[in-house]
Image 1: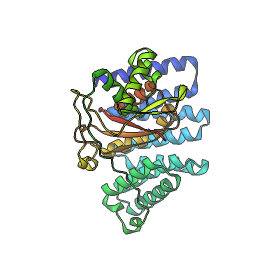
Image 2: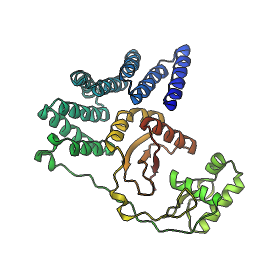
Image 3: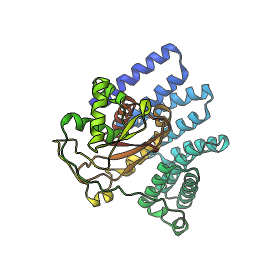
Image 4: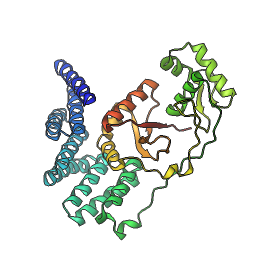
Length: 344
């Protein structure tokens, strides 16, 4: 609760400042953030009020995609209140905008919600229709998060499990590669390796910014870890960066762990809820953090917290990466393990 109180206070202050400046896009964003916080707290009527304020502001701006997103959020809050008929009305308004303005990503999200809501209303044919159209759209557009969410929804709702959808293309999954254990590292080297494993790649500047060491020290540590085989160097000169070799060092007690092969079968806690929240907030994550795709993956037994992989449109700084991780932990209400994906 303390975490939510702090988040609410910060969101209200941000809204007040933005209102004093008359910055409509920022004001709308603040209302939307307030709605997200209230929704996560379970205060759905407060969330609806904030989302409606965001909707009015977006309508003044004439931003069709944001208007559709606001309608989607309001509909979801009504769904959480089990006001399914009202939710369908709002989702249908959102869908109409998506089709008129050609907004495939929002359309994929709203069809998911319509399938879920019609299923709750036991209107099987409408639920199946929206599920199938949304699933096909997601596959055609390459929306990997949405594809996974649709398949999860089908697994959880019996009336969506029909032969007509069984022939749809399956999504390939890549199991985690088994990693070989290595000797325990000194704390300062393990700290660098942990950054490389978490962030996917590190540079000397990243170490200077995050560990507050000199550039000479940062370069020396990276070079030493590369010589020892813990890191792999890429590029030369200013373009040099390092990635972790194919093994993991545990973050606690300096112990080394080798993942069990069964780790890939370990289910992420509350996967359906995580997918729903990520799906509902995808537009915000895309705009604020340049997130292209984010999805839950299997968590190893040694780290039972939810594990998410994220792909960025542009490579973030370490600070931006940690800010995203903190935001996601607030959104999901629990600690997470966030793994970035980078094209190599």
